[in-house]
Length: 451
Image (cartoon, rainbow, N blue to C red; front, side):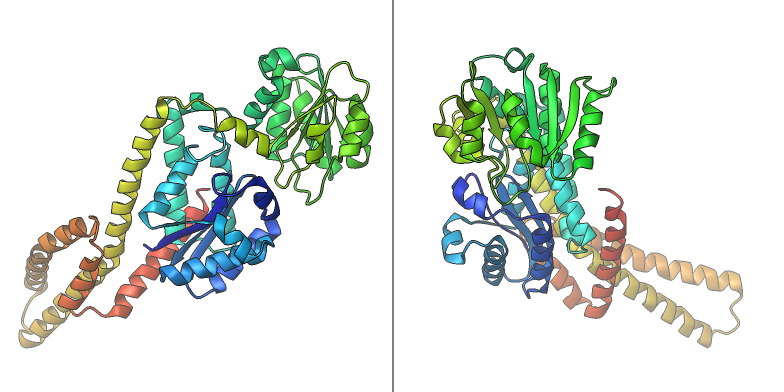
């Protein structure tokens, strides 16, 4: 295993850099394809959220891998390498596994304990599988990260350590008032119809807003979300869809606005918000969850408007209290990292053990055939008994060393045992490689159906 992750997040980079470095879906696909075309990477997938961009790869050379992945991130993000490099972090092998498991558990999130990142990890794996850039290592890693994240949320109270970014943002808007009290009876405008916007709309509906207007570039998606919100079996709130061209009019009627789109430019300008906020008895509340930002940062200075965006959320969450459950989650992560490393090291030697047993079976078959040539009078029963006896002898001779070598290989520093086994028994490298390819193909077929 030579797992490498190169990335940047809200912990390493200012919001201004994260905004510029955001990766649209088509850019993510091109980044993965170019990563595999680069010599050091055999597998790759990208985890891109509103506050992190991370490129995961299986590399054969550490320094060359870091240089190549950093260059590719710079090229596809549009931020120059010299400017981007100070904000990049690098994790390798077990540290990379530890990092992803921590991310999956919400320990590295802007709001500790939030669970939305699990869906984003699932999407990252699905993209790698769809493009065939995620092989056995990344399939195993991301599948296990999802299981570790779910375990952390089910076995601990990490959810109490923080809330989802949506809930936390709404709490920041409400300040010292409960969200349910603050939101009751308000008219809400939700801009965007993706997963984050849908979650915001559902959260507002449960909090008791009177009406939700969903605006989206694709009207059909806005209509579908509005239908779901208004269904009797859903939230039951009054909801309708609007085209993006109507956002200005809807803004003037709204009390609270949540925006999270994939737009590369501003969706709401300072002038538009200033016009909508003028003359109100209560502030116009705006929550910007997009990266890059949807709402002009100048809104922070507009009288009659209160804006909470990714940057202000980062400042607020830095002071959020940590729950005692965080220590328990960290313990889970450490245990799972050790188990994953042991499993990967053990799996690394499996093709060699399989090749050894294949070679032994070939030797048995050859010797039995030679014996039949020298003793042509053997009947079927005698031949079967001799064959079975030889096989048992070989199995008994191989059992202890192959079991022990798997145990040794699973321990830290055990990677060299596979090389030693190949050398001692003069195993054909191509035979070992063919077993590895067969295992990889089987794993790929299985994992594509598990996401």
